[in-house]
Image (tube, rainbow, N blue to C red; front, side, top):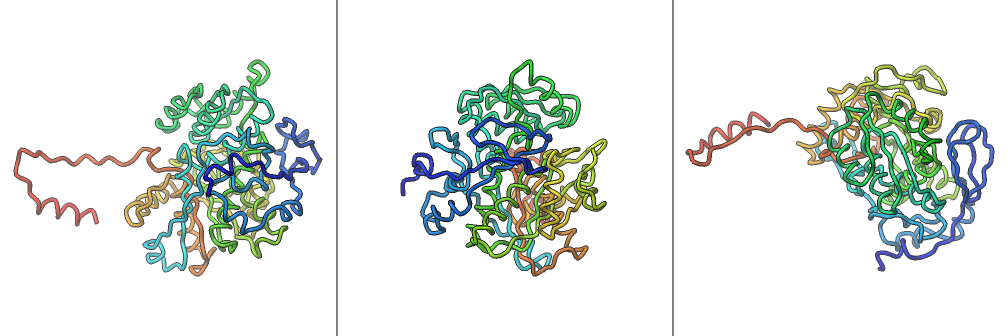
Amino acid sequence: MDHSSNLTTERPTFVTHLECSATGERYEADQLHGLSDAGKPLLVRYDLDGISGAIDKETLAARPPDMWRYREFLPVRSVEHIVSLGEVMTPLVSLPDTEARLGATSVIAKDESRLPTASFKARGLGMAVTMANELGVKRLAMPTNGNAGAALGAYGSRVGMEVYVFCPADTPEVNVREIALQGAQVWRVNGLINDCGKIVGAGKEEMGWFDFSTLKEPYRIEGKKTMGLELAEQLDWDLPDVIFYPTGGGTGIIGMWKAFNELEAMGWISHKPRMVAVQADGCAPIVKAYDDGADHAELWENASTVAAGIRVPAAIGDFLILEAVRDSGGFAIAISDDAIEQAQVTAAQRDGLLMSPEGAATLAGYEKALREGLVDKKDRVVLFNCGHGLKYPMPAADRALDHTQSIDFAALAAAASTDA
């Protein structure tokens, strides 16, 4: 197998047009677009019959295992424009202790921390920067809670773009330094991500940058869509019953639902999962809108949670998230920061998987959903761990030994049994 063939072999492409997610108005493909005239996200549309005629599951399975194996399903026209840092297929990690503890049949984590810049943002930003590269963009700006800015810095720098990133002042320190080290210009802002977004919008005319805010360009969804394509392929095109997804801006849940609808229309899958949007109770605008039966979410005041990545007080794609949740027969659920932190400890110490707080939120959400009867123990469940736990503050571990003194090994053993 030529392991670079996905990045060097031209494939047929099937984008027909873009359309407004709210009005259905059509927009020309192969042109630079932000939001639609209605101020809503644009969605990329494909000739699905054309894709079906160009590729089958066996051909796909023979390709190198990276994000770009799905070229026929993706918007980039030419391989020369692809910006890649090695976007591997991320593993499905079983959680046997969790299954035994909860009496559950099948609980699997899709571990997105294995991607470049150690988070699922590599998918969306890798695709978005690729399309910016194809469409001639040279200067980018975005607000971020951390991981998206790091991915934008990495991919933008790789192709020589200027990148400006604005993040809340309390963004995890590792994230801020990572963004800077990856070549972006980064500023801490005394506000939340929506306040950072206002700075990007305000500087657009004077700075001439392209606004890379979540869903304000059409292609991050297409990168996140690969999570759904990949999951389907990894499970031999038999999708799980329920997906728990940490939801801030919601691009992933929107992208996966788009993937499943496209695969269903092509006859590649026979059923779609229930999609569950997981939020923290200190920032749960989607959960409130879901509970209220509303199509749009209200701005969440004084948003606060340890899971920085899902601290998004207002999501421009709120109606698309709610649509995916409702159309799939899923739901939205909020959990406490205490539950998130406990789930992170449990997954790390008992199943060996160091999840980000956002990823751990899905485990906490699943446990709460089980208790409330929203899911069944027999359901096959996939939890998305969206980033690496090493990027976030961890509990102190300060015990020390003096090697010049005799070691009390019985005390060591006693301490270990106390911890257990």
